[in-house]
Every structure is written in C-alpha cells, then in structure tokens.
Amino acid sequence: MTRSYRFPDDFIWGAATSAYQIEGSPLADGAGPSIWQRFAHTPGMMANDDHGDIACDHYRRYQDDVQLMRALGLQSYRFSVAWARVLPEGTGRINQKGVDFYSRLVDALLENGIEPNATLFHWDLPAALDDRGGWLNRDSAHWFAEYASVMFKALDDRVRRWSTINEPWVVTDGGYLLGKLAPGHRSKYEAPIAAHNLMRASGAAIEAYRATGRHEIGVVFNIEPKYPASKKPEDIAATQRAHAYMNEQFADPALLGSYPPELKEIFGEAWPDFPADDFRLTNQAVDFVGINYYTRSVVKHDDEGYPCRASRVRQANVTHTETDWEVYEQGLADTLMWFKQRYGDLPLYITENGAAFYDPPVAEGDVVDDPLRITYLRKHLRVLHQSIEAGVNVKGYYAWSLLDNLEWSLGFAKRFGLYHVDYATQKRTPKASAKFYAKVIETNGEGLGG
Ligand code: BGC
Image (cartoon, rainbow, N blue to C red; front, side, top):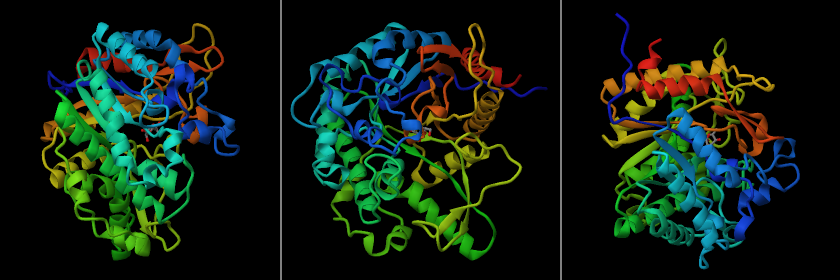
C-alpha cells in the first residue's frame, strides 16, 4: 500500500518573500533609505554590483503577483514590511503612503482568499537609525516597538499573524561579526550586543502587541542543526558551541529567558554581562515560532574557526545547492524534535524552506524545468509530514520563495523562486516546481506520494 501524505485539514500552505529582496522602488512615495539601500550602493559589497532599486518591481506589480499566488492556490503569503517606508527616519513621523502600500497589499490578498502573514523586520533597518547606532543602541528595542505599534494599528484588523524579527542570527553574524551583510561591521564585541538588542526589540514589540493586538504574534529563527564530524570529545564540544552560537543564542533568551553557557566561552571578554532585567523583556509569551530550515552542518574542532573554534566539514557525494548548502531533509525532523524537547510544545510554522539551483534561461513559451528544486521540496515535505505524525505541532509551511529575488549580497544569480523572473523584462514564468507545489496544495499533501 502506498503511504498517504495527507496533512491535517487546517494545515496552511504558503510562500514567503521579503521587502528589500522583491519590492524595488526603495525610496518611492517618501520612504527613507534603509541600511540595505546604503550597503548595496557601497562599491564591492554586492555580487555583480546588484542592488534592490528595481529587484522584482513588486512595489508596482503587487497586484499581478497576488494573481501568481492565487494561481498556485496559496492559502497564506508571508511578506515583510520595510520599516523605512513607514517611518522614514525610523521613529517619529509616519509616512502614510508607505503604510498605504501594505494596506493595499493586504486588501488584495484578502480579496483573493489569501491570509496575510506579516514580518516586521527582515533586515532593512532604516539608515537613520543606523546613524544612531542601529542595533548597538539599547533604544533600538523602543524604536522597534514604536514602529511595530504603528503597523498593528494600521493592519491588525486584517493581519492575523505577525512576526517580529526574521533570523536574528543572520543579522548579527553577517551584519556585525563578518561584515558580509548590512551594515557591514566586523566586531566580536558588537555582535553579542546587536543580538541581545534584537531579542529585546522582539520582546518589546510582543509586549506592545499584547496591549492592543487581537491575533497572533511570534518570532522567526533560522535553525541549522549541527552534527559532530566524529565521536572525538573535541568535535562534540565544537558542535555544541556552533549550535549555541547559531541556534540557542536567539531562541533561548526569547523562550527560556537565559543564554547558554557556551556563549561566554565563545566570545570571551567580548561577552557582556547583560542586566538580569533584560530577560523579562526578551522572554515574552509567543503564540507561535517560525522556523526557517535550509540545511545542516557537520562540525569539527578547528582552532582557526571563527568565532566558535569550529568549522564545517563539507560532505562528499551528496547534493549541494547553488549556495553550497547540503540537501539534508532529516535535519528538518531533527530540528523540530529538538525544538519541542527544549522549548515545549509551541505551535510552529516552517516560515521558509527552499533551495537555489541553476535554472536555464527562459525562452518564450518555455517551462522552466527545475527537477532538483522539486526533489528538494518533496523530500522536505515528506519529512515534515512524518514529523507531524510523530507529534510535532507544525501548523503551516511557507516555501522560500514565491519569486526569484535579490539574494542579498549574492545578488540575483541565486534563484530560489517558484516563479522565474526575467530581470530585464520583469516577466514571471512558473517553474515546474510551481506546478508541483500547486498540486501539493490542492491535494493537501496527497500529491507528495506520487
Ligand atoms: C532569509 C532570506 C534568504 C533565504 C535564502 C533566509 O536566510 O530569510 O531572506 O533569501 O534565507 O538564503
């Protein structure tokens, strides 16, 4: 007998994007610049000198893009709000035209039967706030709560699921430790401070939501499970450090109100003594947690490995994506089980999962054949189904991404979309994976069996 992959009846199928990666027109209608606008126009920071000035032109084509979502049968769409469109200086003056854009987007989604799922911060901090220290300034928690409250007031009548921060680890590791992402700092001293303030900010926004909000709010982590390369105690200890650094550094203060002890070991004298009272703010009750899952890493001890004295051991004879991420679907099951054991039985959403693979250029009338992406999605969705059967409380899944888009400093060359985007013409073409995913949604997972 063939296995059934039918998902629970109330399971939510969606796709995700983020503002700077798709919208274009970053300064339109009175918006202020963000740190990504600045970073992308700083010579040498972006592959191929790419930037988000046009991107997928979604700011002007959002109506058409909602029709693409409808064609997929999406039940929910996860997008992010560009803070600097709404508050050009980051705090204070509200730019109503910026709010109106998201209000129109939300209306268009609802008119087409698609539930909006809004993320408040997907990395595009207003540049004016960076000038005041950005996430290094303790006031950032209050700035963020102020901005979040503006959005709650404008959209909570129609948006029923909010997330505060997307992937704080990437913000701090890429933006404050390694300098590969905006704002491009490289400091072991700054990274833990930025991380801590991001989690204070998330907590402050949740606290603000409890005062006025009527629906659900949570936070989104990218969890990358770590596996030791050998049974040697030094590899096992390195693996635990890498796990504490990437995963627990963010989920622990939010969900347990503490930090794992390895962080002090990793950062040494750069690890601050945070005021105990801060953990009251970071540790707010959430309605759900979003997990972004892409890959795992196998870890060995390495004295040169920065900052954890650990490095990744690239696995041989397995598929890697164009971003050199190992395809390892079992890591999703392990992540979900770990999460449940450590943090309790919270409702979870897979808020991102997907892969960049080479897609051939599209000629008129072509279908974009992307068998590797289909295989990736099928494998992960089958594992997700097993996890749910094993008792993990996952309530929905969002493919990353609806459209090919700006893969941050890697530029447009890395394509994660279900729809191919021709950046010269802005033509969208469904990939074979879009058709596959539409069938999965239509059959509530049953289509994964065939
Ligand atoms: C981010 C996305 C990004 C994707 C693929 C996640 O880290 O939230 O913005 O495009 O992964 O790298």
